[in-house]
Length: 290
Image 1 (spheres, rainbow, N blue to C red):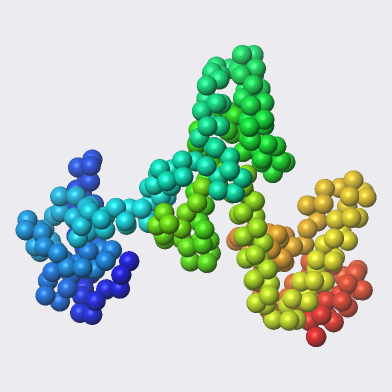
Image 2: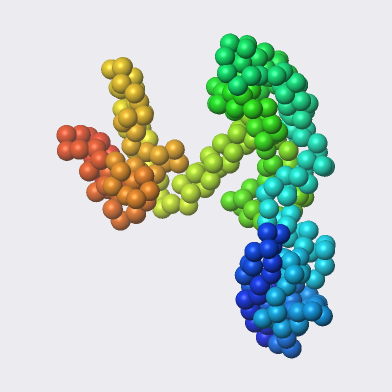
């Protein structure tokens, strides 16, 4: 949205939605009392509702034009963005060129009863077609996505609207110009790579001593995983780090136990490791001191 002009004030206004329910919203008014478009901040007149307390007939009257209304809807509504993207790219993945709409059409053509042996057979036929047309779904990480698509062949399970400029880089509130069509497996790969980039950036931004402590912790994590595998235990039960490299403290915190305090790193690490691993303690202390 545009910046509110100097002297403007925000008032609470009311309008009626499609269900005849009265909704409250905030709208800026100029110092002269003129309504300002909530998107572009241009002034406009409503003959039937000149004052802030006058009830608007619909939400569209918060905007100076239909163009602003549609643009705000496109920017704020993920469903609206997806619909616009569907019209432009027709469900074609821009990376692997999979025609997701055609895939869904093929799967939906196979009728699957709600239960029984006939449903099992129908789902098996759908699965074979999906893997033949879209081998991207064959990966281990895409298994759940494949089963959802096979059980319910709809476009929402076949392709995703992906932000070209990622949300974490400021691309969240955008128009369809910042969106692209990705099949579900490609979208999962892109999301995973972006998560890795974010973790690397957070790690690089930490002080050098903190980064070296993280390196020591990762080596210890790998050692414990290897030891657990050798004993037949599940490696995830002994993880000391989360996926992005933060220390995990057995569950004391409200959000899964992630800690990221520079001053208490050494004490937290030693508490996690226990008192019988002197060599590892020395490594941690040495990393913190450098």
